[in-house]
Amino acid sequence: MTRNQRSRSAKYEMGDVATTGAALKRLAVAAGLKPRTAVNGVGDGAPWIAEQIEVQFGAQGGYLIDFFHVCDYLAAAAAFCAPDHPGQWLGCQKERLKTGQLAAVKAELVAHVEGETVANDQAPVRACYRYLVNRPGQFKYREAIAANLPIGSGEVESAHRYVIQERLKLAGAWWRPANAQAMLNLCVLGANHCWQRYWNAAAA
Image (cartoon, rainbow, N blue to C red; front, side):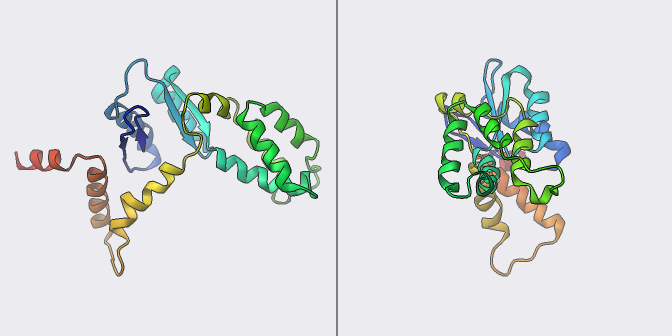
């Protein structure tokens, strides 16, 4: 999904990983992308998303890790970093992230990182620290908040309910793959307010 921050208009498209990068650029243009438009991508940290933002938008693009996704990692680490007051500890780290104190969050985690003998699936502090370290430049929440930009990807992730599921998951509905894709295409068309234009072109 691509949203024009000024008009609040949204554009949607579905596709596999190989076509998503090009789709992002295409949707951004449809939403009003100009040569000086700043592009703010928000996602869950999958490397290919950040890579495509850079490839498609260059210096215009920026990428932010979904704040609430980071909080999941911090929440898992909280019980180990502050077992007596995990909620207070988590609140402190969240506030630090929002105010540009990423270094302080990392330092807090480093002080509690599990030893190398602890298996990765039993080391939430290490997992959280690595998550932050391996995504440099993708936690600029202070700047995003100051610019009135979203720091969460919930709007994108929830779009599947009203763009896809509302029509395709009707009670008792069964779909052949080809028919489901065709209906999905029409759902996306409608969500993009291109319904009439499509039928005008089909009738021409």
